Amino acid sequence: MAEVLLVYKVVPNDPNVNYEELKDRIRKVLEPKYKVDKIEEEEIGFGIKMLRVYIRMPEASEEHSSDDIENRLMSIDKISGVELEYFTRLGF
Image (cartoon, rainbow, N blue to C red; front, side, top):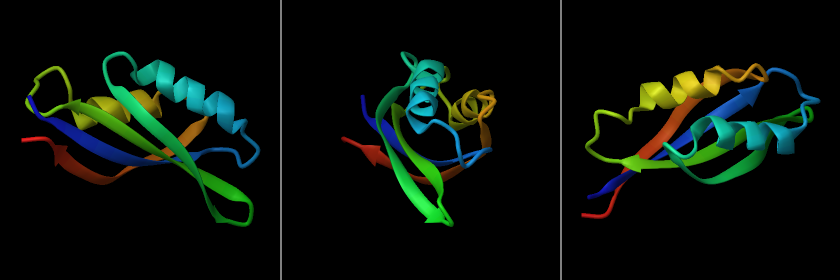
């Protein structure tokens, strides 16, 4: 079965957040249902960073959805915004 890769921009609500702790919380809220491939930090200006989260899930599944991922991410109290930046199908 093919998979889908989703890339999310995640914006913390505090520029002084501990990014390593936040990455751990993201992994805990998503896994094992979703596979977190990597999380990158990206500076967006004035010392403020956002996270780019790469997530894989099965392509055709009623149990998995981008809405569920967004709800799980927004349930973390250190996050102020989540945006699906990119998605693509993996495999054939």
